[in-house]
Amino acid sequence: MVYDVIVVGGGGSGLAAAVSAAEHGASVLLLEQRAQLGGTTGIAVGSFTANGTSLQRKAGINGDDADAHEQDAGKFPADEIEARNNSQLRRFFLSHTSDTLHWLMDMGLRFLGPHPEPPNRVPRMHNVIPGAKAYIATLHSRLLKLGGKIQVNAPVLRLIQSEGGAVAGVVASIAGIETEVLAKCGTILAAGDYANSPDTIARFKGERYRDIEGINPHADGDGHRLAADAGAKLVNMDITYGPELRFVPPKGATFQQLLPARGVLAQLMAAVVPMLPAFVMNAMIRRLLVTWQHPEDALFDDGAVLINREGNRFCDETRWPDREISVAAQPSKECFLLLDEALIERYSVWPHFVSTAPKIAYAYVADYLKLRPDIAKTAPDLDSIARLRKLPKENLRAAADSAGLKGNRWVLLGPARAWFTTTEGGAAINQSFEVLDEAGTPIPGLYAVGQNGLGGQILWGHGLHIAWAITSGRLCGKALAQRAS
Image (cartoon, rainbow, N blue to C red):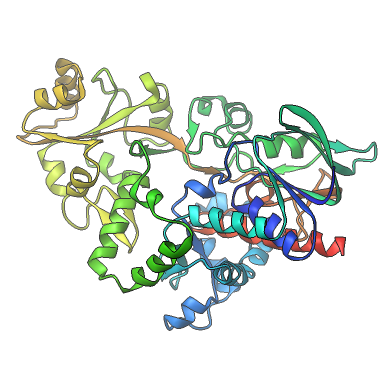
């Protein structure tokens, strides 16, 4: 089999690359190792952060540009992390975000916003309706209409590489058979991050992080492995977003996941949602908060304690990342947060909240009790709390006593786990998305986008990873298709 372009991975970056290449006349094969498309993009909230957009101008925000956005993006990470950022590549990426957003809108996707997210100086966060699965559904449909071919359950085993190092294609397992597929113009790695690859995490970040899992259980680092095997230089592989504590998600599909991603109902919802009252929108956002966001560190500074399945306190809750490393060492890798009466009262009103998306929405104790009854339990005494979660009551009492917790009302939140949200390491690339070797020389025929091709960028802040995934895919697919023509 021979195609102009082969794309490895069916998440946001891979689908964007495949669609863009097909739009510009290239024959495309997309290979996805799982039974369905989506990747990490498909399970995200769906924020797309961009500057200079039509939605910004409609909201009265004029003159926003990539220079200002690049400066603000550098304020999210700690100084020692930001010092390792590839600022030229990030500036290049941010200069194309508006075009990418409008490309998606031209396909029929609709966005709310822009919303503020400090330290961004102006609102830049655009939220897709109804959520990130809409990216996947829309790009998938578009690719099929353009004649692109998709093969699922088709893991790429290795790259086909000449003695001189040029990549000519891939060997993939298709229908259980090792199959060579050649690419006339290039092979694009778009296989996601390595947040759930214990060996990769341990190798680059440290052995003590091995037991902490990725929030996407399928983020196994295969694209990074393929790049490294081809001689790519990998950069910033020790930098991760997390580990951080997050409550386990609800069982089954969430309300947002049940909403239509395409079709008449999705179009109707896109028209109606912007007209909803603010209190309705805030309620919807709070529901997302209690599903996806982490508990604030201030909770632990104020005295909340972590309890394991045996009812025992097991760490110094105020020390990150030792806290998360300790959680991953507990039975089932799970813990619970115990709050006494004073903490419940404190975290029931502004400015003390359990979780937040700054200046957008805040979730307090009552929100968790109402919206997440699966993980939030309350009772007038510790023994009742212990019974609700089948914890040894003597151990639970001892844990509360050790922290000086007391009162006539208690809340137990959990289970929670320690997770890596995403990873910032990737292959070194240039602005043509060519993968570079250790000497900085392009490896002929090999390209990387999304998390495989971060190229040294630090993209902390909501909506930048999805924006990079789809922008890099769009630009790379177009460039390779133009080579084909």
